[in-house]
Length: 212
Image (cartoon, rainbow, N blue to C red; front, side, top):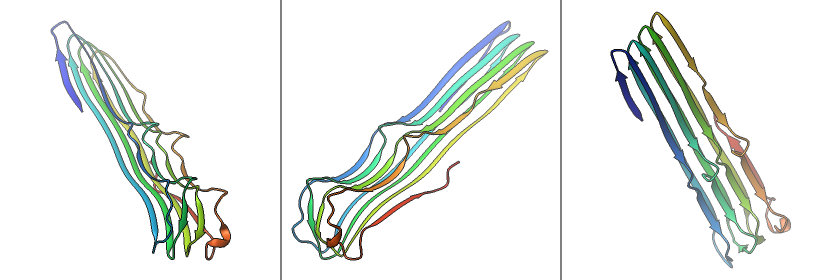
């Protein structure tokens, strides 16, 4: 968070910017063979929380206050669970591939100005771009069950309270809360899986939680 203010007898101007970004990925990857097992589980769980806040006050005969805030879970912040195409699995129990993510981006920007002429403007932006993917691309020689599950809970929130007090005053805000098209929730089973080797057939599960 960034907080501050400025003041002057004749004039005062202040500009703040606050950034919170996450670009790191969380991955669980299996590329080897399993010749015998009671069960196989490849699981990736990611919790990403980007929270950026600015608070700015400017006071003077002529005053201006501006603030920009960005909370961003970027393109690189994927949560993935992958069984690669070179893997071959034999298991008497279940084979489970799951990717579970909770992504929260919250941008808050409050500005205030006071004077004979007072202007305030705020630009908070909350954005989620990282995806959630579970993928089985290997071969199943034998297993009791195959389950591939992806679940993503995304929330992007932007808020602002701009305030100006003066003989001549103006306020403005541009608030953006975005979950981009890149932030998909995907579950895949590749073409090399021997379906006859999976008792009861494979299960693919995709889910998403509340989005603000």
